Image: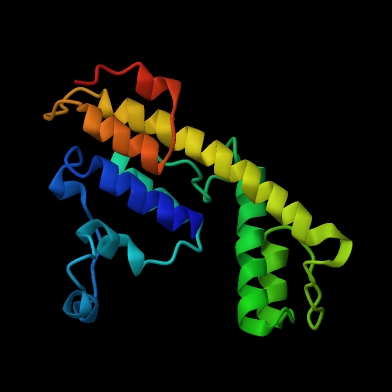
Length: 191
């Protein structure tokens, strides 16, 4: 939910600065049919998407600001350990929500592929061995670091050559309201 909310907030803030040809995705016709006047087009682009993979997060940020944070296929990347840990959390979420915590053979194989051990038939218990606290602390740290990265990359995107629209104070206010503040944003020439 955090990644989806961040993508929607970023898109709402940068809509006028992102060239239409960069926007990718599809919206189910049924979603459009049922959309009410209060639904924004930006929300429709991302609301139906699942952000259960870091590739999806990278696709969204790349589309809007031309930057990727995770690149899960790069096993030697600077965030490789963090990427594996977040992918493990995604797998735990899947196991807890779809299998009531019971590890299937497929789940066990997916954990093993990430370098973690979860035996087939074992039940994941977030209250056992402080697992829930460890996951919460990891996600809290990553949320803070991702947001700082996103704001810095947003500032770099907005200051890149070829920006056709002036940087308005209204846009900065929206970014700060929806995503937060960052010194790189403060350094830009807002009008």
